Amino acid sequence: MSPAGYPGGMASVVVRCEPLGVEVAVAPGQTLLAALRAAGVPIGAACDGDGICARCGLRVLAGDAPPPEAAEARALAREGFKAGVRLACCVRPTEDLVVRAAYW
Image 1 (tube, rainbow, N blue to C red):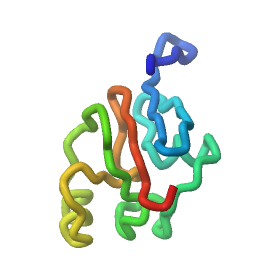
Image 2 (cartoon, helix red, strand yellow; image 1 turned 90 degrees about the vertical axis):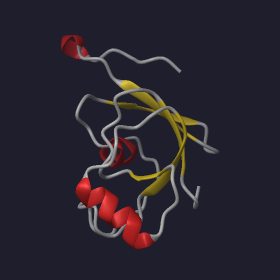
Image 3 (cartoon, rainbow, N blue to C red; image 1 turned 60 degrees about the vertical axis):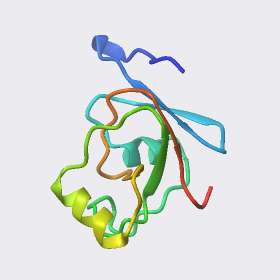
Image 4 (tube, helix red, strand yellow; image 1 turned 135 degrees about the vertical axis):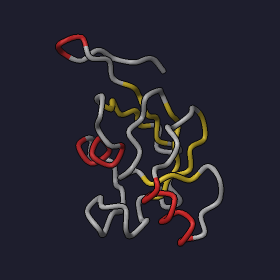
C-alpha cells in the first residue's frame, strides 16, 4: 500500500479492508467511518458516528492507529473489546492500515 495524493499537497493514507480486498483513501482529519461510507464499504454505526453504539468496531491487523481518546476508550471498555479493536467513527488514521470487521 502507498499513500495517494490529494489536491493541495495533502497526503492521504490508505486503509485496506480484509477480507474484502478493498482499499480506501482517507483524507487528513477524516474519520475511518466517513471514508468507508464514502467508498461504499458496508460499516455499522447506529449512533451515526458519535462513538456510542460501538457497531463500527474494527480490528486493526496492520499499521498503527493513533491512541484512542477518552470517549472511545470508554466505549471499547464498556463493550469488552480486546486489544487491537478500534471504533471507525473515532479513528483518524495517520498511516496506512489493514482492518477487518467481524461481519465482512
